[in-house]
Length: 267
Image 1 (spheres, helix red, strand yellow):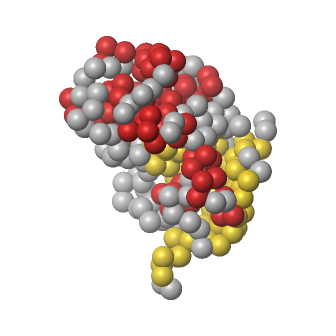
Image 2 (cartoon, rainbow, N blue to C red; image 1 turned 180 degrees about the vertical axis):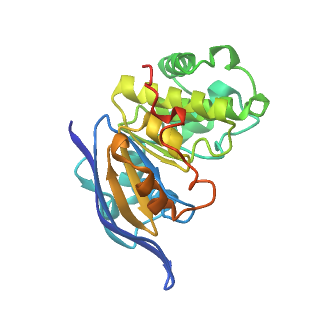
Image 3 (spheres, rainbow, N blue to C red; image 1 turned 180 degrees about the horizontal axis):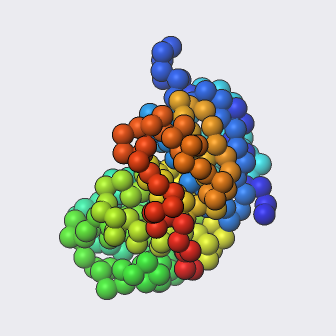
């Protein structure tokens, strides 16, 4: 697999006493589905936001397709972001717009400001948006307002908007944190399938270990801003989970053998 992203000794401090990342290093290759786990405050969201430069790291280097992001100009960052789809915990949709209009916003990075302001999307862009929504089971909802959808449906719109960018890398920050278990499984299954089918690398932060074990090809454990586990899902033992979460309430009772986490994903 081709090397896509290099994270080299990345640090992020918000002030003298708050060090969210303390020197994180990892490589991401095309087609990997990486899940980052860890307790709240471990640095998961900070790392994702550094990768797409929503915030800039305090130290270290992030290299995407051979380009060091911290050295890139604002215009270069804008172009790089077109290749990095982002899925948010709270969807970040525009409620008054239709489903397909929200998906088409994934094309704004490829358009002039004039065409974007007046929604002058090409026929090809509109057709591709429809086909993407069809892939995630939302074709019949394309003309609904976003605020008429359930949480799980909204997150599938978020996935579709990111796919409309035609990305090489997909980032998802706690994409199922606000969803019930059934909706969570459906969203994760769609996310995994489209990334697998399109050979898109994904870096997904999750708090739910069972979903990480079910969908990840590789798991990163973050604790206090440092990587404490980087390996295969099948090598993640209960002892390691307890260590990552510091016996956090709710996680210390996690049982690898009784959960449906290790079920085979159908693609």
